[in-house]
Length: 140
Image (cartoon, rainbow, N blue to C red):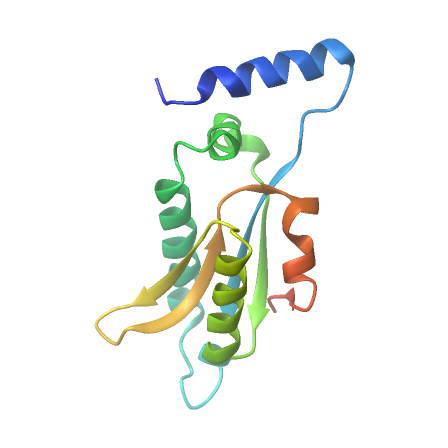
């Protein structure tokens, strides 16, 4: 059993007993938009793979956190939001801000080029992290 599961189960029981809705957790990803455009022109599949790598790495890295445990417990109710960053500089600046604010995340670096392609937060309640992501729009 993962460390922290008992805390999450107790929290869920308390909320159910009080009639409160369980906390909705969201995993946010921020993917570089410029990679889909010239001069890079990466195909859609390559971009999707970068987002998958970042999401998987963030879930694995923070697998023992109670929010991640709760998020993975109900696979059919997972919520992910994929946002776009215009370029690598903006993505790295976001990573720096999140690090300063103690927001747990993974900045995925594509190898062997060592290019920052996508950032993924561990699952969080939306209201805890939305202020850091409000300038980013949905990935198109």
